[in-house]
Image (tube, rainbow, N blue to C red; front, side, top):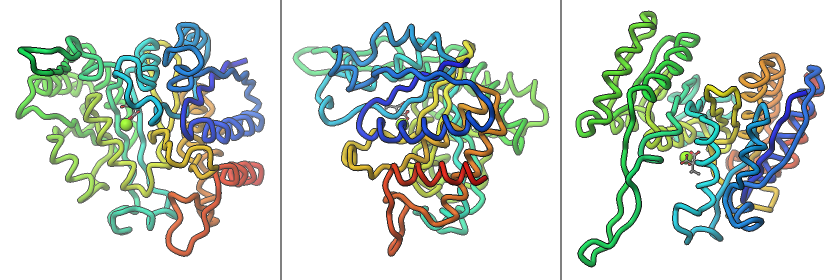
Amino acid sequence: MERILVLPGDGIGPEVTREARRVLEAAAGRHDLKLEYEEAAIGGASIDACGTPLADAVVEQARACRALLLGAVGGPKWDAMPVDTRPEKGLLRIRKELGLFANLRPATVFPALAGASSLRPELVEGIDLLVVRELTGGIYFGEPRGRALVSGRREARNTMVYDEREVARIARVAFEAAAGRRRHLTHVHKANVLEVSQLWIEVVEEVARDFPDVELHHQLVDSAAMLLVRDPRRFDVLVTGNLFGDILSDEAAMITGSLGMLPSASLGEGGIGLYEPVHGSAPDIAGQDAANPLATILSVAMLLEHSLGASAAAADVRAAVSAVLGAGHRTADLAGAGEIAIGCTAMGDHVLAALAAG
Ligand code: IPM
Ligand code: MG
């Protein structure tokens, strides 16, 4: 019996995790996987319930689980709070506490959605890239940080810091991923300005010696951002630090058609995986059954593959999503002019039907 902890979070989080859990239950049932579900609060929901974005008890609960399925955190209700107590802190803390340093964000284009991209279809068809983002270090966690009043002026600081061990382990994850794909790795950096990036280049080069079959390029982050919209198909695997990875993964997501499609996996050395959509809590459409659950459903596919070793079940889920899109079903974020938009629950129903048929 494998334990799965569902963390719905805020905004559209509860809606998309509900659909994703139904799909997980169905896929697991078809492949004889025995799963046990628990649910807990994170983010704003947890602040409202117990005054903190992540309770210690939930961290302990998570440690006893095989995998975590998370919706999204944050919303206008908590926007005025200082960063240290905000909903987002709950997410950052669970990543850190569980040592989930490797964030995998694959961006692929479903043929049926090539027209939904803001780029021309001929630039988009066939995009298949993977952003490997370092998730527990860098400027997100560096000390010192905080605000101060200096000579009567408000000042704030954050620190970007990486040590060689943190860089080497994420580089290794990225090289291994590239070795199993098209054997091309782009390291994204800002070494013309940042010492941190110079260290990354050194360490990534050292790790590269163990992967002679993988072709390595170092790309400045500004030009990587530009190349992603000019010629996204040139990329196979990208590896980068926490902040650049956050930004570039949203960009990569958008060029595939919608932020509502991109799944992610966060992995570490402890054997627990955290799965969540790349998109946020979308408070503007929360509670209206208008969200796209596919990013979370595709995160379930990653969960099946990475945490449960059930690649056949994962393939079933992806095939079901592809079939539903191929049949023309679209949530509002995906619907083009003249296309009918269906709701979050209806989209979940279609995926379940496709799964049962497949
Ligand atoms: C993401 C999100 C988070 C991040 C926020 C919600 C803290 O943007 O997972 O990409 O910056 O890591
Ligand atoms: Mg982000």
